Amino acid sequence: MLMKPLFNLISLNLLLTAGLAFSQPIPVTLSDTASGLPGSTVSIPVEVGDLSGRNVLSYQGSITFDPGILTATGVSVEGTISQGLSVFPNIQPGQITLGAFSVTPLGGSGVLVKIIFEVNGASLPGQSTVLAFQNFVFNSGNPPAALQNGLFTVTTTTDLDIIPGSSLPKRFVLYQNYPNPFNAGTMIRFEIAEAEASRGNVRLSIYDISGRLVRLLLDERLSPGAYRVLWNGRDGFENPVASGVYFFAFSNGDFMATRKMLVAR
Image 1 (cartoon, rainbow, N blue to C red):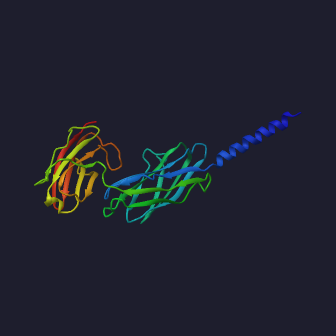
Image 2: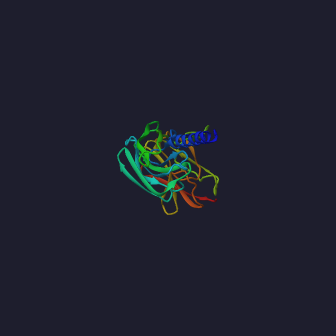
Image 3: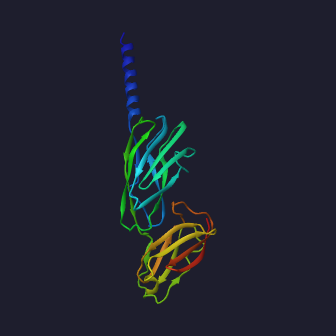
């Protein structure tokens, strides 16, 4: 006689548990440790919790930032949960708005989409901007999203070192990188005298064989001295570059020097 009420009670508990799980907010976060050099291109991921079983067919919303530090240039879905979708960005100074729609529910957790930014060349190391969500929702608000804003900081390259014990250079020298060929990383050494230091910012850039800029390693004013910079063999999006011939170019005012190197994966 008690089996039917007991069965109903168990069914009710299961329904309540399922409903509670379905109403749990999905975390949506932006990195609070994002950084980049002035003049560089950076890719900042929007990460989400598990979308499986949540019937997420669309998402839309905006991210705001300081336009004096960052300029949004687009989005990338390669290698993300949104791969294969058409993501429609609307870009304005200080804001990028996203909209994406799918005919089948999205699933899994990880990177939802990547936002591509240019770090303004006039920005200064140490400057930062909040990356703030504005009205970001899944579907029409169900399931709910738990939003966590991010932070971007302008940096100098942490891989630039002054070579200790070196005397003050009397002329400019750009040395061949070592090792060369290389796989995981290589060291680039150069010396600048007073003449180069007085010309303004020193730029050290990596180009592929077609002349396309792969990565800006350095763009700042330096004092006379001997320096070394480690290049980790990755582009501005932190993707490993393919095997092949590359060039590193030192420029300072109207002065430029280049050398060739080989990546062997």
